[in-house]
Amino acid sequence: MGEVISLQPRIAYPVEAKSYGVNEQTWRVLVESTFPSAKTAEGILLAVAYCQARKLDIMKRPVSIVPMWSSALRKYVETVWPGINEVQTTAARTGEFAGVDAPIYGPEITETFTAEVNDEDGPRGSKKTVTVTLKFPEWCTVTVYRLVGGVRCPFTGKVYWMETYSRKGARGVLPTDMWVKRPKGQLAKCAKADALRAAFPEECGGYSAEEMDGKVIEADEADIPRRSKRGVPQSATVMDIDPKTGEVLGGQPVPEPKPDLLQVGVEVKELIGKLVRRALPNGAWETAIGYAAERLKDNDLAYAKYVLRQAERSQSVSDKVRASTTELIQRAGAAGAWTGAKDYLSKLRNDGKLSDLDFEYAQAEVDLAQAEAVATAAAMKEAV
Image (cartoon, rainbow, N blue to C red; front, side):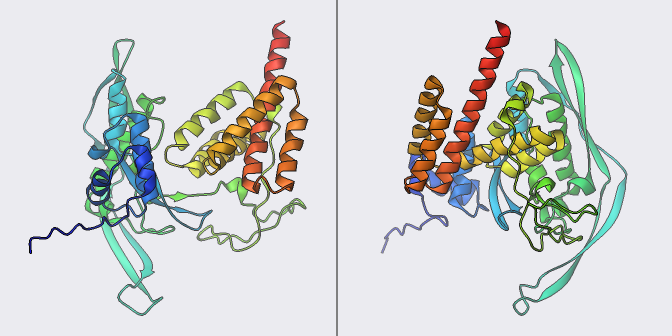
């Protein structure tokens, strides 16, 4: 009688949480209250890491854990995105945020969405047809103000409901429950996020959780060769693409070309550096690659993919491998022995002392360091 029963949280306390300064009591609050819909410990730890890096109080839930379908991994993965309040907080921290107008909505339209979904109450594998009829504004605008040189300047964001709404399922068309309940409110949040990005592009450059909910992490189209009247390179394998879903039905993707690292300009390097920093907290590598693909082409795009894949790979290697690679680069740079460094890495892999992943990581780091050293030497020579 009177015995207190300690219930375990629905997601077990991971040992990694200690390194973030999260004790078991705090973990229980994060799991049961702050992020009640999170499915994995990794997702919550990503949120913790993001908030610590941004000096945010995670208990106020400034970020959301958003499940997104990865077309590459063929499964849902949990990603972390700032909520609209966090985006506005970031703008306010600049000291130049000067207010926001109420949203303005376009004409209301009515649309019917129909889709086949799994019938959870029926036999296994059975489907049922679901129809949702919804009235919503065609578009929404929000104006944010920023002090520019002491002048209060307006920045307006405009988003369209059909382009923005969150969908159920990886390839679904049905709106999520939140967008059904709040068709205007959710659109207004996305319009505000768009306006804040326009007003504060450096500080609020990423997407918000409201915008990314229900989206798909797509492989860039350059990685999916389609049938061509001119044929395909011999190194490629033709794929069949489902025209309705975009799914790859067979074959292997064309290997990504290795960039000429010496032909990449400083501006491109700076852009990719920013993308790496933005993608790192929430593991949004596919989104970053898609962003680069919209703005770059040819060798610059190949460089962007190369660096972003390398940054993604670095999260999977051990601290020991990273430290050893850094030391190897320092020695190679001092002696100009880049070829020797690469031969050394090949020997370690052949001897079974480096895994394929560690070898690819170390080799790419050496390549990037060598290219940077050559570019620096060339710049110094021109200056003289």
